[in-house]
Amino acid sequence: MLGVAALVALGPFDLARPVADHEASALGRPVTIGSLRVRFGATVTVALGDLVIGNAAGGGPQPFLKLGRLDAEVTPWSLVGWALLGHGPTVRHLSVADVRISMEHAADGRPNWHFGPDKSGADPRIGFPTLLDARFAGGTIQIHTSGGKLLQIGLDEATIAAAGPDQPVALAASGTYNGSPIRIDAPLDSFDRLHAASTPFGVVAHVASGYTLLDFTGTMTRPLAADGAAGQLAIKAPSADRLLAISGFGGHAAMPLTLAAAVSRDNDLWKLAGAKGTLGAEPFQLTAQLREGKSHAPDAFTLDAGFTALDLSKLGGQDKSGETLLRIDDAPGTLLDAHITAKRVTDGDLAAGDVELKAKLAPGAFDLDPLTMRFAGGTARLALQIRNATADAATLRLDGAVAGADLGQLSRLLGLGALPVTGAVDLRAALAGTAVKAGDTGRSVGGGLVLSMQGGTIARNLVEQASTDMRLLFRKPEGVGRIQCLLGVIDLDAGLGRMAPLRLRTTDGTLIGDGTLDLRHETIDVTFATESGTTSGFALDVPVRFAGPIRSPHVLPNATRPGARGNVAGLPPGLREFAQGNPCALG
Image (cartoon, rainbow, N blue to C red; front, side, top):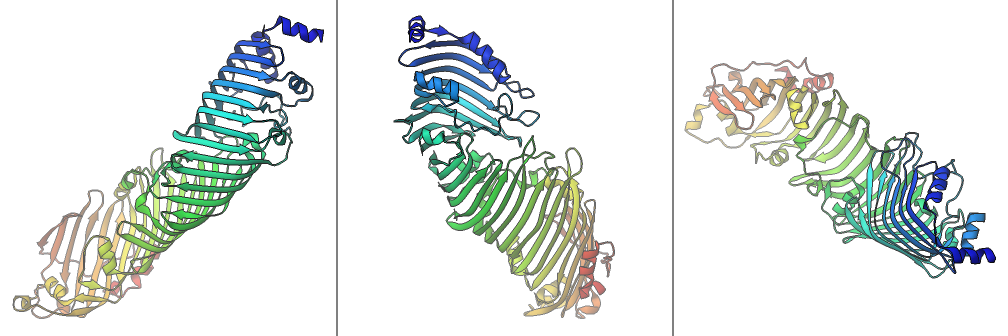
């Protein structure tokens, strides 16, 4: 008792230097303290200013912790339990201002918030203080994930309050997360429950960012690291934009979102299971998991989602697709393996049904294999592969097929209006090119495209106009002729294409053509003519040439007739077989 009385009489003590030296030795880090005054009495008061704890060896130049001011009142006997047994002290009042924390993994992969010898088996819950009345004002937390992302948390103010160690804890905080305003209100289990190692700790968290609301109800076995979590998650947002901004993914999704799911976290594995919700008032369901990378390895994100309807015009980024850089990051922060289905997808006037997409993102590589859908009355399949080629460019390979599409629907979707041709059309493409931007791929693209029809109808007056039939001076032909076959082939090499054969055979005549397509300069030069042996005796069969910019070519009579046949031998094998299966390939 005399010793206690002496401490009371002699205080306060300025312990900045000896405590800093002790902590530097214990933590293995540089530690400086501007001031530290301790007064002993009925409570122990602590006033600390300008605390700096250095970063781990191999970390960045910024310190791990900078703290401007801390004032605390601690019960004396709890300090004894803390010193002898490692139990957390009871802090009656705590005030902290201006705290800066930078969290990252050092070169060896160890987190910089782990100090001294590895104590991965110890549970820090036991030594965490009981905070009966705590207030925090002003601060930032930067989290450098092992996958290379930077999460930034800004703290305006926060409070922790409990009527006693065995009573529920109320946590409230406001600030920003990745630049978006955010507020948290969380009723929690008691501090006694927190100190019971490995016992599930009850958490109810209400998070709000504007009108975007997130609620979690569940437990955590490692609550100080938000780990060992298991519970139910509910999200309600007037627009998914705010959630994308908070998550750091960027882009936009201007549609209201609701979601309910079971969520869990176990060490580096996050899971979202049995999720159901609505996007733009349309229902969807999904499962997802994120495995955090270790030692600067990328995170791995897996997604399996099914949508009733998706409106792509309300999704995506702001950049034009032609300006998209093709090269894939050699060290992406996140690897992707996604499987997405949708019963209906729209983008303006474009619409598709039964859409299924499988996509993978890996270092320096992206694969879309396959994308399938019902489109324009037919079916479509697309496989896309991107591989890095140089320091700033990538090679794109595309294999696509459209089968049984209605030509009238295709024409309307492409903005060509109504065509005097009906029937089902098939299209195959096998292309490859190397470029910096997606819009520049055409300048280097090689491969082929084949357009095929076997059946359908064509307006009779169109054939007579193409053959320059003299009877058009005296009458207007009516009705339609039957299409026996149509074949159009483009053989591309480094952005230059030979267009042949181009052949349309009908019951009223045969139209042939050949020419060139220059994707480097976006020009076309193709000549069409009817075969004189297939049209009426009144037909002049004058060749017509289309030449100039692809979007607005000039139309002129031409003295030279197109070749009667083309060669499909130079096409890739799959396209060659497809073209040879059309009767028009035989002339």
